[in-house]
Length: 360
Image 1: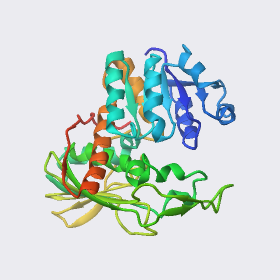
Image 2: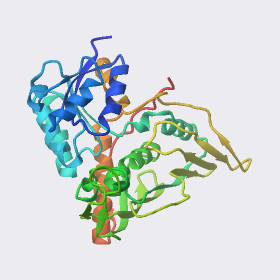
Image 3: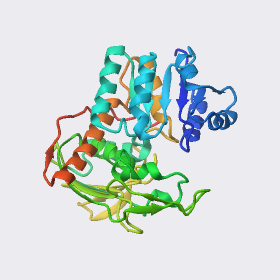
Image 4: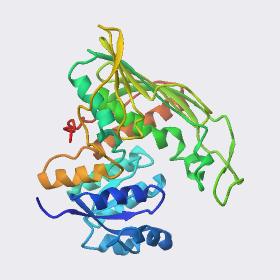
């Protein structure tokens, strides 16, 4: 095994500590630097992880001790930061989505291809034992031929807990682009790429009010749909019903279920790495919980970076890759186009599904 992949974080926001904990606990990668538009915030993150240096972004990009830039900026900045990192000769791993638009994402893929650099992208939750166990069960024919799936993400909105939630309610945000990657990455991993979509959306509230933190009580405008629903036709023929909403106070809906000719799979929340996968067998008309069949055990944010580091060392493909992330972004953008035009949209992209993660 070669030297660990050295990683520098750009963007020391709320999610950065979770990534940092994973990267400082794995032998496959080493966190060396952190940068943020607010140097004090970078300093606070670095202080919790001995050996990690808070630096300016320019210094991080020029450092020979950074092989990969972990891009944890807001979605609107994902493309510009990734392109700057690629221009500096670094590999890149973006927080989801890959970019705000497929046009920006395509530019990332094209530049990375020319530069010979790798691009990874969250979510890596799909690499945990939850989704991977379901995938192994499907591959083994446990529920026969998959014919349909449902996916539901409902919440009253992120302004209740996030101290600076405005970006969730402007272009590049919203329930679909924010939470959709978890659900759609899982669905594409389970059922294959999507070839056609149709959708509807709405904006029930024109303003939102921050509910916690120093700015509690501040009202701000909503600039995007906050309730989005769609139908997906997978290339395999399976049909998925999708609901993503910031306008539902409470619900008793499954997160993801897959329906086959011989039974049903009930999956845990795809925003998490693990959780029980339940199986209904048509032959016995009974439910049971499956044992863990595949996936990284004890996985956490940053597992996709470690997987990329292993693949880079082995010369193989990494699983949380930009091709999958681009297709998921294309699905989301096509759903938004379909909702705006009241017409079905046929996708132009596809992707290869990464290999199953052997149970570790």
